[in-house]
Length: 311
Image 1: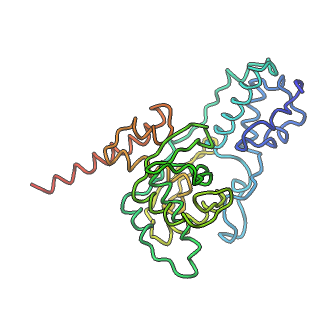
Image 2: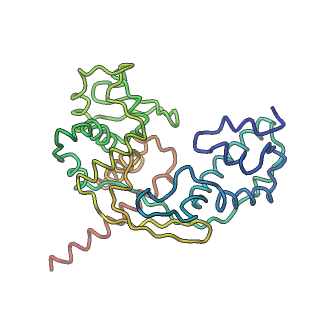
Image 3: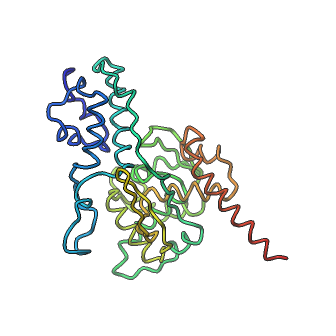
């Protein structure tokens, strides 16, 4: 067991075993020199076949090579992060003695990831959207999404929320991702949503309807599209040194995690201090909050210009 990379089964789903085994069969810890890791990065950038093409079928007759192979720099960096975590785990337990990976820090050009969140006005549009009979399947999706927007919970934690977790005026949750124990006070929105489903039986005494992350991501986009969340957003990515700029409507970029980001930005905008928000969200360090604080500072700066019209 100590001789190879069988331990890759222990990696989180975000790092696919096929990335290493298709790059080099029967790869071992001792193979992971700086030179091999450099080759591995080049493989992911230039040769790795994508599970699905980047362009949707029907947009054009043929696919370009860039649509079929090669990961973006941000994805490569994420996968290297999972690999470092695994190698640190293996090293700490004596399975790995090759420490070349600790010196391996490739330069991957990236832009800061945009924080996609809904403004107060956009939340109101989603909340007040009238759904037709054919669109009624989106109603529970909206409830779950709004619950995330007003509680700060991840979708996995909303899916796992049981009626026994509801303690009068607050909920007590042990998060799925980090196993943090957090207490979140209820507000009018979260209380009303829980009340709506209190007499609906769900498996394992869950408090709210359950949907897979994939289904939620798909239907939240549809919901936001219907609500007219159409602000154009420039998304910049790099593959190697090649920059790609794409303008997308905001609804295409929303997903389950948008609810949590929406909660954080709006909480800070309301003047709630970061340390209180961190107690609700389970963030353990201030660094994770900085992108949200920067957004709020930007909102405050642009809002001050409104006073120019008073004179």
